[in-house]
Length: 109
Image (cartoon, rainbow, N blue to C red; front, side, top):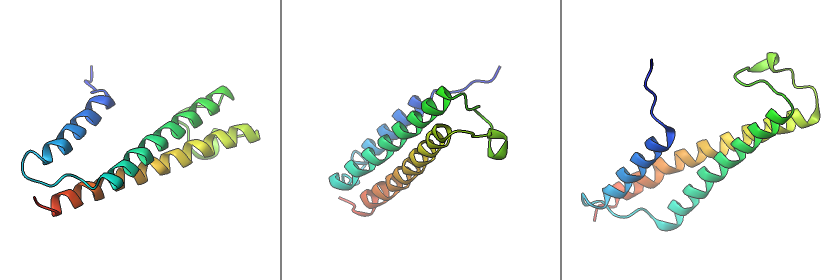
């Protein structure tokens, strides 16, 4: 039996680590950029999930990629497109997270 940790646990640990940066002497992250990062990442995850739910309503198979997906209707394609757009936004939010943390670490208090 493999042990898997919930994704929320990893997210919570990352948040605690970033908040802990100020304790060890690093500056607080820029609030405007940090706010954008959270909205971009959270909004991307929400769109990704909505796209998966939408596609699942049309019976699109999960864990199948490429031509084997057999997307027949406009609704199926739109749902998978929404999922892809959400994934892209979430990845951009994750990269922005790295920028926010790097800026906070560079601006030593």
